[in-house]
Length: 317
Image (cartoon, rainbow, N blue to C red; front, side, top):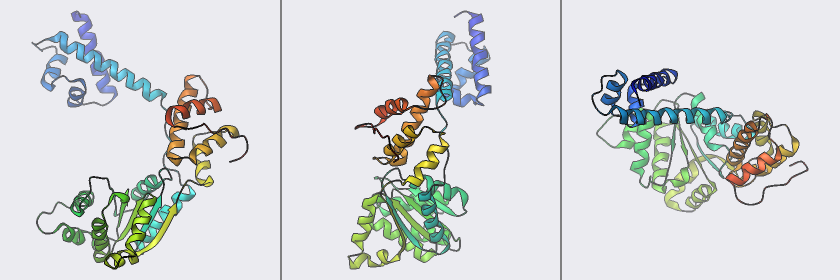
């Protein structure tokens, strides 16, 4: 690469940095070029291997172009939509928060639990949402996560007491997503915070979570925990009233396509799978210069993301 080409490459790099509001450190991390080397190279003062640096920056420019092409072709997924099921989820969270109650929401994947939690937390003050995972095998791990979300930086003393002092009087709400991963002792710790701090608590999880809690109710040791749950909701799969607003948001008008999409939404993964399949189908349609997806687009997308037979539906679903 001669000097003229090298200077042109430097201009391209600066243009990309300006266009995407990128700092030197971000470009350094993404390109694999050391910060000091990148700074000197951009200012044409680098005394090292300029050709090797130019090769890395050329690959970075090419990667940025690929990212832009992918982003341009990728449809924007509609944001939170207040479906009928989402309204029910949010009503439980609202009741738990302002009536200082404990709620349990159990449902299969793709019924909109996580989206409803995020929307409610974004719309209301003093709502602290955490997501449990299989690594949270001890009550202490759950308390650590909750302390981080709440913003407790106090050290010394028992974590549960620190949290209770921080949460008392807030009229707040703790929401746990994927709560089926919590141990019984961790749930009992959260129940104690709910009781003593006087704040709401809602556990969201898959259907086995409900069976787990129901089983606790039959033991004298955890009868107090079971009796605290005043709000319950079981949702096995998305309902018709959940799918139609989503299809409207995606501007899916063809009835055959809408019915096939609804049938997909009733399978494993629910609304999440339906959204993923539609998103890819829209990408396919746009690549062919069309605004509306066809049944063929939906079927090709379905075969990329799911198993089993594509639903051939002609009547209303």
